[in-house]
Length: 400
Image (cartoon, rainbow, N blue to C red; front, side, top):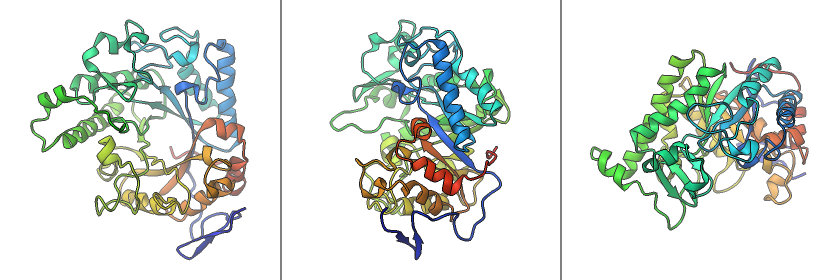
């Protein structure tokens, strides 16, 4: 075990328990991401019988219960496709191995029903603009909207994306996601960190035509792109309650909005990616303007990591959330904890527990979400068991 780290005069050792000066809230978010893209977590392989797929899914829900979690964030639209019988997009290939092929059952419908039976919330996780993790449109089924509307598509970095600058694209992706809200009593709509794609050196995201058509009122392309993302968020926030009342809207951005060297409002970090400048996502604004119900910044770095220190980012996000109605949940890199291939602090299985201890000092932090389900359930290093022993000794109701 590494030596205790000292932060702001408070020693945080591996055996640290509840945060000083703050009792546990009656409710908190204890979640895990259940990723389906490229079969990251589920199903374990493509083409399994429906019965085996269903059994694996239920095993993950049971694992969430056994770890005393209360929320599962289930990826149901990983690549402009669907894990439910959508009228807008094809069945995801991650189920059967063939895009558009009916798997013979309804994964999202089953997940919602079975999660609720177990006292879990089910947050449906959608990726708005990613079409494919390859760059060949002919690999998509002929009726795929991206093939029907090739003018919507931008190849970039070996992948295919919908163009966020087109109003018809923004409307379509919202319609596709809202179909799930209409069909199922999900507890929340959840987006991850992908808006405009992460930058790829030497490549250009070619939206010249859309910018020429729609960007005239903006000082530069970056401002126009940020406005496109803002519109997507605002419009979705307005439409969700019209489809189903009580469904929350949460977003999980990359952990750094801007570095302080770029903007005095930014965090004391030196990250190579800043969401405001590189993904054209003004995540700070969304919180300050109360456009969303919760935010889950992916603070995937250890305490003391110089370019992006967990112990500096959590207070920064707490300050952003202070005085708003947006609930702050910290996204945690469980997959790193206890991994001998990671830098030294992560090799200690107690690093993740220390994160929860540190974050517990900030009343704005309303819980944590762990990436991802495979590590929560399998717990190859014992880091999750340590979190449960130190912080989740009792069952806790979800935030609701």
